[in-house]
Image (cartoon, rainbow, N blue to C red):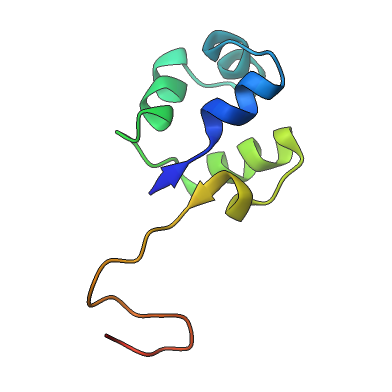
Amino acid sequence: MKNRLKVFRAMHDLTQEDLAEKLGVTRQTINAIEKQRYNPSLELAFKLADFFGVTIEELFICEHREGSAEPGGAVQ
């Protein structure tokens, strides 16, 4: 799952450490999310979206794989 965390963090002039402190996580967690090595828990995803005042869909981009269910329940 891709994300725009680094973009939103930069827009708010925050370092990874700043954001981590505000959310109660480690800088390594923020770094791993930004580098797409870690998908956050649903709780953390909501915290991030709320912090930036955006929806989860604005912050995280779910990429559908070939053969996965499409919106409306259709499978390719």
